[in-house]
Length: 478
Image (cartoon, rainbow, N blue to C red; front, side, top):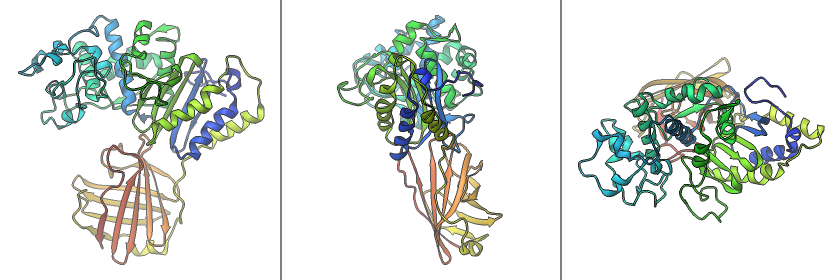
């Protein structure tokens, strides 16, 4: 294996892991239809296996969702080390100008450590209230929400608390987290060009919004495994690493086989088997296994996040031995071949249809619909299909490969980044299936366009979503 990037490469056996165990992990994930997009397994500081399911690729960043929270926690740890704040400072002390007219005893008692450990005392996640705030003042929206419980006594996963941590660091440093972490974390770890969403007032969203590569995630986890040290240089105080990754609050029954009930630290989850992790919606993981000296970075688009961890505990963790193993060339060769051939292929179907010539260039006027789509047009030429649509946001288009991925950009789909790999196949004589794989995100949209005379019906589904995975059906007439 090569050594061209930040972490040295090694064979699995040299670091005490059978290649066959990694192959089985991959095969089980695929067999279970758990859509992994990438993974990187690090043991003893060496990458022993890495893979990207095409069109996902090593150089392409991926949305982290709530794995972002662990980076926000890191920023707080750095600010504490610089003497800018203490975890026992009152939250209200940073925002006197945003203080509600009536301050209850629980809000007054809320400390930075309660934001970090998701024990603010709220009964509901405050994120929705932040989004609905018309003036864009998310800090004020958070502070105005009722605090039902004594802080520190009640665990509630609350992305609004993470955003408050971002706001505090920005207030103290004069920099958004994306800049504050630049020379302190991103540059030392070699994380290049990270992007991070902001709220309407320019504060990085502390609970989500960071986008980096798989190896960036692995380096972050390795720095934590090394107790805050990277390339011989201390990045974070060892005491902060220990505090942030240990159990700060109970979040369920740790005797259950659930990695969401093992306790919560400072924006890190405790895991089974003495491990801990940062994670994000739909399968973004940075799993640190101190007892095994291992780190696992995964990006994916899955609905069942526990199922992925179960495969880690079943196949990878128990296979790790303390000493190197004899090389098994056949198993190593099989794993290398498997990793080189990873791909998420377009749906099967015919690349062309006699129906394409009849509908090409025709505009279909849509009936009134919740999505605000007014018309759609399909154009077929040169072995490609171009879909054009107009909705309340404007006009959009995407060009698809005929039975193959064609990479490009589109504004067709709201709320996802524009970079997509697009494919169009005829899944039936009258049905064109368009697949849009947004390869910097977990999301895959599938549009089944069924033609009947002068009419078209478009049904759209998405693989994972915070809401419904089936969008309202569109009906139109040429």
